[in-house]
Image (tube, rainbow, N blue to C red; front, top):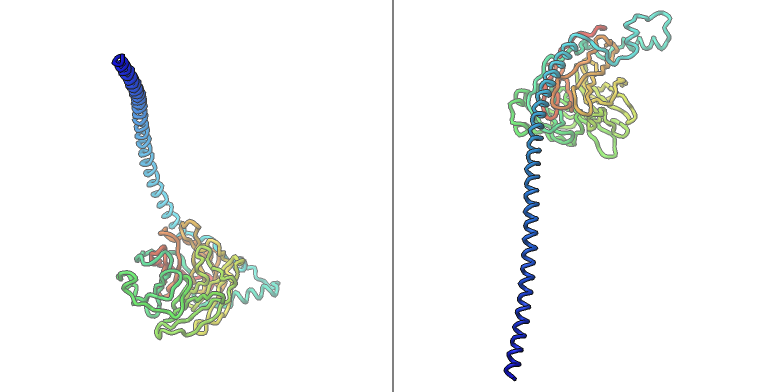
Length: 398
């Protein structure tokens, strides 16, 4: 009986173990079937994604091919447009050389042209007539055209100034819009053959210059010194003795820039056949450029004129024979042009005042300095040093 119970218990235990293992095997088999179904679904999705990717690749390839054709077509159109623009510029230069457009002149010029001065003139008109014939400048020339352009080299940053002293033929270079160093070269030829700013003599000034409005006149350097909380100073520096000869305060309210496109230039000094000139704007609200005649020996202001030339969109200016030429541009640099002319003697008429365009260069002029001996402009354009050779003609009313 006891043996029978043991055998029965063993069978019950074996049946329980078999049932457990069978359930485990069924569970594992169900899980494997589920995994196989999911893998089959993933395989189907993968094939669908692969098909979609191939279709997208084909669409992308077709789109890129179409874009490439459009790009090539656009390049051809741009090349054609560049050729047409160059042709138009040449035609404009030719037309400008053959015509004399109107410029900014005073009302008195038109009165002189019409010849309506009579005995019945008022006292104010008589004073204007006397002022018209009170000559400040004895020079009799005016610019008629830009004869040629020479791109000398590229040295320094986008803004700066370089100038040649007519007396000594030395070249002075101001890199940037502020600093206390001036680079000196014995000649334009030496500067052209130099290895940039390294192969030069450095003149260290006792104070920093500001802007691109310095001038060199008869072995003297005239530069603008700006101190925080004080008026501007025009400093006269002897290039031979390497010492400051004189300085003069020049009050400008709010430190107003003379050119809107070059706000770093607060005051622009210019030298020509007649001496030293100073271009400025006294206040921020003043819309036009003022011109002052300076005594280079004492730095005294001899006379001041309102040129009526707008500051807005002005990038630079220069003076020749007592006549100021203001150069204008746009915020996005385009072709620089002389658009406003003012003669201190009021003898330049609208018929002879030129509206000249500079040849298209790299950007906009940071400075333009006139050399009266060579009849040339020394320009700084986006780090390039450029020489413009000018053609001159006699003024009509001298």
